[in-house]
Image (cartoon, rainbow, N blue to C red; front, side):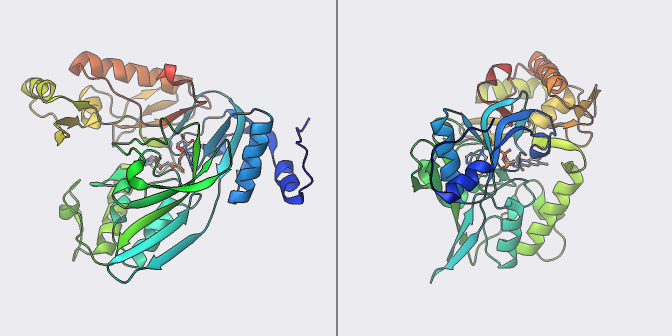
Length: 357
Ligand SMILES: Cc1cc2nc3c(=O)[nH]c(=O)nc-3n(C[C@H](O)[C@H](O)[C@H](O)COP(=O)(O)OP(=O)(O)OC[C@H]3O[C@@H](n4cnc5c(N)ncnc54)[C@H](O)[C@@H]3O)c2cc1C
């Protein structure tokens, strides 16, 4: 039976009526695991989001927001209310100098925003092309590729407080951004949802070509469009398209180790792929997994992608059990070989299941 909270407001009634029960999330996560949401709704505006949050508060239901579901590992039914973010709209303000402020609603497709900025010749996010998902989820793990992270261009983030429904802006520098991390993934996880982001882009800027072999791969004269095209081409060659083969991109973060541990490893494994990072070193997790013999391996209906060992793929499973088993085997073998712990990148749902990490 549908739960209703007492409201005379016609808009609130309509939003409340749109809440469905026991809905499969299989098409709302790129691993395509088939678990259900106890309650399910799609938010298309901040006002509808406010009504949904008030409903959840009234009935003491936990709220989980999903954007594109491309950084999720759903491994059980999700109790409470799952809200799919479809807030839309973009607004650009060109300032007198070199700056453009691009404000984007959280439900907009990230890659389309990159495409749009590149078409206007606004610099700053061209290296972040073809990353799936919504713009609102991009700051959650501080998306990054080819030497750029969203924190580099993020002026501020508009949020809604889950408890009070208040909407306000937070400066990018106050969001606790780090490598694939932010306060939205941690201490703000139960408090704030992102409703909009404001990017600071530039009308003139240097291109960043020094990462991932971009400068060698670029065809013709390097300009913003050529960078975008090259990033799209290289990514399409080495990463599986989730619409064709279910996956959530990199399944593990690149581990960060001390200089001492790095030097010891380098002595045993002279070909170790690593980069200096904040006083220590970042190791290429894909290399560690590949060298441990996992690339292209299949385990029941899941496996390790044949062209990139960092990516786990789902060929045919409807539940996450075998993927979790494969993950545990990879972690163990990498630890046995290198003494390095791998950490998972995608967020496990329902929240609170991190014990299975
Ligand atoms: C093929 C492929 C390639 C990828 N490549 C990269 C890459 O190069 N770099 C990179 O960094 N990532 C990469 N990813 C991961 C993923 O695309 C990004 O993390 C993306 O930002 C996730 O967006 P989403 O809308 O799908 O988020 P979802 O998977 O829906 O959600 C991810 C997390 O964010 C939370 N969340 C979602 N929306 C909001 C919101 N509005 N407010 C608060 N919390 C929210 C969710 O609750 C969840 O905890 C890749 C994934 C795939 C499948």
